[in-house]
Length: 248
Length: 192
Image (cartoon, rainbow over all chains, first blue to last red; front, side):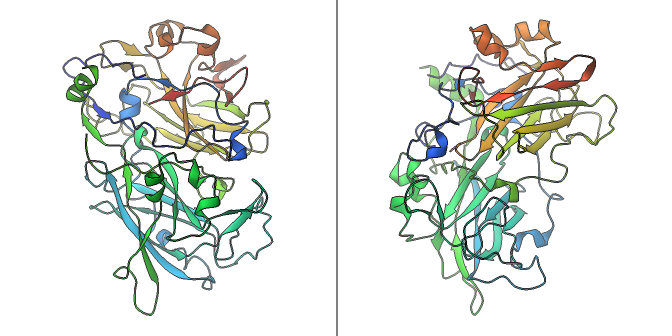
């Protein structure tokens, strides 16, 4: 249960971020075997949001080069695979965009192989694809990456385990409370129903929010398919009102 | 608050090392900065085994207890420095990480009290479906720690001790802070 934070004195009025309940996967999700020795056994202690939590690193302009957002032009040649555009907005739950915030992505190549020493999947590496990108959202909170559609790949979680194709996303938002790392999926992947990571999200409707949407209007003729995916981070409200509401 | 439904979390998986580390991530201030402290430690699982595929992120106030952030109601810090406030270090094969930073100052708390100097920490790893959050406090701040609203909310002294770094004998600029995700020495984690 949330302990209601004490009311702030004049002069130190802080924003307060909503606390989602039942949204994120439970850390102890037995279907995903790696959680067994890594999920804390005790529930986290709920603490009020104070200065350290309502602030966060401001990592906007200057942290990326424009070329960092195009994963298909980082090497001498073009990577193999299906060229795609992935774009969307970073928003707060009240619909306000989060401008000038850093978005980081990493992913497997078209064959389902990561350029990582530990990845032993017997699929080819692509010398023209590192699978890493970053960008900063524009004034309307929009990000845009050009990349290659990642392949599905096997993993050792259980017999015949395969991850649906996905791109890892890392978001900072405006405050420490908003930090989020998640995965974006592609429409109609036949692997969804078998994937314990996707299905670790308790609410089936919330799972669907990780699936991007094909958009013919984002698709560029004779060049690349377009997908849209918005990311919604915890919203903030004026402290005083929200805390009083909670205490009733 | 009604509005758009939130985006759920997913694990960083085993390959975060290709995407998240930065060349200068672990240096919150440049190497050689006068007064800089080093915090090192290991990320360990429920059997005490090192976690080699994790990421530690830190966020903290500057030595004056200020944040260079628009929501700090006290305004921007007066001294512009190379201090970034944010640190990020992937764990090594032995689960170890290292952050070079400045000691944070104490903070005013909205309830009128004071928070002892601390760093907020996010831990990411394969097997963590969401980040877990802990805090690093300092062993030589006994008085401030005794009044800190977060530390005092933890009644079990053994649990509370998991949040306090260990001083290096002989070097006041070095601290150790291990993070146990699970087990007998499990760190205290927070829902912020």
